[in-house]
Amino acid sequence: GPGGVIGGGDGSVIVGASGKGSGSGGRGGPGGGKRGLSTEQGLGDIVASLSYALDSLWNLPVALDLIGKVKFATADAEKGLGTGENDYVLQFDIADNYDRFTPFATLGYRAMGDPPDLDLHDVWFSSIGFDYRLSPSLNSGTSFDYRQATSSAAAPQRELVAYLNWKIGGSWSINGYAVVGFSTSSPDAAVGIQLDFKP
Image 1 (cartoon, rainbow, N blue to C red):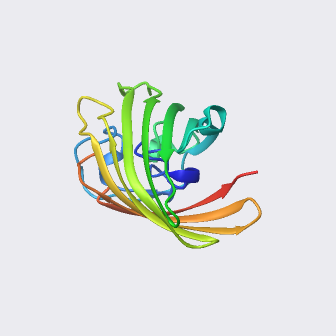
Image 2 (cartoon, helix red, strand yellow):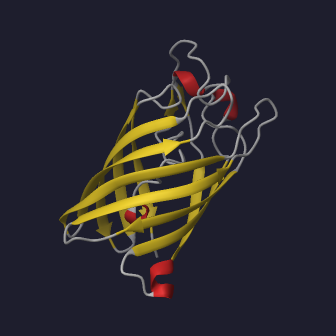
C-alpha cells in the first residue's frame, strides 16, 4: 500500500511476521496439505526494501513507486517459520489521494529462493485497497491481496488485510494488522505488528 504500510500480496509481511506459524506452511511446503495444528515460535524472516518515486521523475498526477525488496532467510526453516532461502521482489505501487481517502494498487513479481527439498515457482502478485487518514499521525485501511501458487501442490494465495498505522514521531511508525485467508495457501487468520523506519 502507500508508504509501504503493507506489502501487497507478496507474502513478505505475513510469513513469520508475528513469530508464529501454524498448519499449512510447514515442512510440507507452502500451501501443502494440513497435517494437524502446530505452533512454533522464533524470529521471522527479515525484509529490506528500497523504493523510488517514479511520479517525481515523470511529473505524474498519481503516486507511482518502484520498489525492490529482499527477504533475508533469518527464520528457522526446521521449525517451518520460513524456507531458509532469500527471495527477491520487484513491484510497482500506484495511489491517488482524495483528501483523507487514498485508493491504491500493487503489481509485482517475486523470485523465490529454492530450498533443497522444495521446488518453488517464481510468482506474480497483486493487491488493491484503500487507506484512510484518521488523524495526522494515524491511518487505517484494508486491501485484498492475490499471489500465484508457489508450487504445483499449492493453491494461489487470497487474503483480506486490515491495518492501523501510527506515526510515532520522526521517521518511525508502528503498523498493526490482521489477515483473513480465503485459500488453503493463506492463513485462516493472523495478526501482527511491524516497526518501520523511513529516513
